[in-house]
Image (tube, rainbow, N blue to C red; front, side):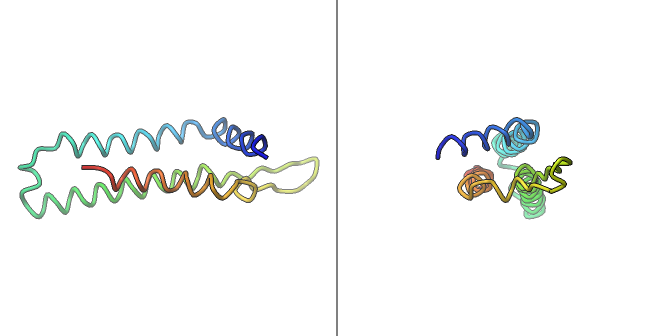
Length: 109
């Protein structure tokens, strides 16, 4: 049973590795930006609101990219049918992939 899951995970990685690296880059940018930002910037309420809006925007973008990674649809002209990769993808892969950016954003400084 592990072999089909491994093959499907590898296929998702092969088709969407650029998006996966983009999600990782967005998360790392958010972490580093929050890490190097001086505490004096967080002193005012307007600055905290701006920072919260930036973090929320980056979180939504990374989650949308993760949903896009798992929503690939393939058309097979020989069978004249559409195959949705998200319908074949094991639920634990989707839950893990969506949970990782969410956990990463909540663990920032």
